[in-house]
Amino acid sequence: MKSLTEYLWFEVPGRRGFVNITATVEGLVRKSGVREGLCLVNAMHITASVFINDDESGLHHDYEVWLEKLAPHEPVSQYQHNRTGEDNADAHLKRQIMGREVVVAVTNGKLDFGPWEQIFYGEFDGRRRKRVLVKIIGE
Image (cartoon, rainbow, N blue to C red):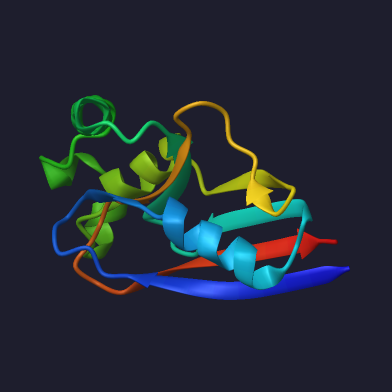
């Protein structure tokens, strides 16, 4: 069995943002030499997410609007978590909605996606450095 573990680092300049990391993960699959296996991509911070969807700007805008309706940033006083001196309770909730990780099958040395699927890093409390784990295992 082969395995590869790599960490990707992100520092999104704004409070929120989505970064398409598909090409980077595909490169790591090639680097791993795994032909048949699994690829885990995992956000290693509690206010960031990894998810799969379409790379379409209108959809990204719709995510922003939808997430802000579900867990609005302001007023920050509406969240007990923010009484600790933080202002990011909404980011924790948004991360919970969007998910912590994805697992993608590796088939014939490539990520085995459905139509239009791409891997994204989602940031909900940016302006600081955060990491994502990529672990690829297989034969």
